[in-house]
Each structure stands twice: as C-alpha cells, then as structure tokens.
Image: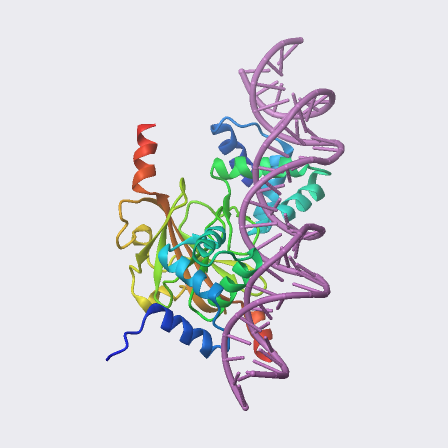
Length: 148
Length: 148
DNA sequence: CGAGAGTTTTGGACTCAGTCAAAGTTTACC
DNA sequence: GGTAAACTTTGACTGAGTCCAAAACTCTCG
C-alpha cells in the first residue's frame, strides 16, 4: 500500500521543519489559498470560517505571516489592492493584473530563469527577487470598456 | 536671443494641453518631485510648503493626481510603502527597491523596449504597462546586515 | 477688466487594511 | 502531564488616502 502524499502532508512537513505547530487554523488557511489563488486576507478569513467554524482576524494574519515565512505562501500587494496570497511559490512566475476589476492571473516568465533576476546595473544592490507585473485590462473589462 | 526652454516651460505646456490651470501649487509639486525622485506625498507636501509657504493636504493629493493624469509624473507603490512619485516618465525603466530602508533606485530596462511589455501568454489581457521591481538590499543596508 | 470656471483653503470626518494589546484559554507536542 | 506555542476575545490604534462642503481665491479668456 503506497501512501500518496497529499498537499496537507506537504504543508505539515514544511511547518514542522521550521518548528511550527500544526493547527486546524493554519491548514484551513492553506486550503483557502490553494483553492483560490490571489486571495485577500479577508477572503481567507471567510473561507477558513466556512471550513473550521471560526477564526479570529488576528489568527488569520498570524497564520498568513507564518506560512509566508516558511515559504508555503507568497504575498503580493499590487498597487491599490489589499495584500494577496498565493501558494504558487518557488518558481519564477509573473502576474497579469487588471486595472479595472483587480483580478490577477499568473503567467510564466518570458525571459528565462536566471536573466530575469539580473538588473542591467544593480548599483551595489543584492537582489533576491524580481517582481514583474503586467498591467492592463482583462478580457471581460476590456470588452466592457470598449462597449462603454 | 534664444529662449531656453526650462522644465517649468515644459510643465506649463503639458498642463495647458490638457486644459488644466497653471498654479503655484502644481509647479511647486513638480519642483519637489523633480528634486527628489521617488518621493512620498508627505514629503511632497513639506517640500512644497518650503517653496510656496503653505499648501493643504488635499491640494497636494489633487495636484499629484492631475500631474500623474497628464503624464508629467508617475506613481508607484512598492509593497509596504506609501505611494511614491517620480518625474521620469515615458521610458521603460525599472526599480531597485531595498527591503530594509525602502529606498528606490531607477535602473534601465535590461531586455529592450518591446519584449519587456510582452507576457509569454497574455490570456486575453490588453497590457499597457510592465512593471519590474528588483527587491533586495541596497549597499548600505547589505553592509549593515552582514556586520550585524 | 470682468466673469466664469477651476482650484485652493479650512477643518475636519471617514475608510480600509493591517498592527497592537493583554489576559485568559486551548492545543500541540515531547 | 507539563510547557510553550497558538488561539480567542474585545477591542484600540495607526497611517495613507479619500471625502465633505462652503467659502475664498486665482487663472484665463473674450
């Protein structure tokens, strides 16, 4: 009987490796984010409540903070938007962001892994992340924008 | 006698073209931003006061809004930072951002003008801007970080 | 120069997202 | 079982930006 590793197994291991406890709240938060990428903290709270009954605002923020810290989640904050959380981590992907509705879509890196992290002239900076956001209008808003 | 076009001449023309009035407040705001790129709204307010005596918070925000709208200024909002304003517009440059002190430095586009605006798979988005931010530590903070 | 519209002032109030607090309770783990 | 981590409760607080509303001021054009 081969045990198939689930997402939860992976989350559990990662938390343990970093010395954190495994709590229902943390797993619910992970579930919420993995179900809906680019989710706000408020939405995480709601989804977590639907799953475990209740969770305090502070616990939501605490859990999100820990999960980002151990590397299970990534936090982005597009201009004009509350912070968004995603579970796609460890790869070099970018975001398409709609100026109207604020929806965010992942897109793979166009350039290649290494060069994308290299600024033409880093001026002594030690760079650890290149964040690329493509701003524009999503199909729906674009259509709506034209007909208006 | 050749009239040398000053920055102010240029600002005046741009505002007029878009049907906006030329006010001391707006020119002071432009001056503040051109003197200190990547300046916060608060800093703009202070610098403008130093120049013209007084300016209300609302007028600062109004002026910044108009100046961004006509294309004289650009607004960026790095994660965890208040909005920053710069007068370098119309070219495709990116930003180096320090995670510790929050300082922002311009850097030219490494890839070339056109490809930088092209996402690998835009999924129906109509893209009008590619925003690239290189996150890391500036020389000072990096040095400080190591010795700590 | 005068009129009309744009802009600023004044003196706040308000909103939102996130942070902080503090004591008690619950839970995970060794 | 004991201890430390984590959660709950019940708010208060902060900063950045937005909104308000009437009066006053200023710019621009004919």
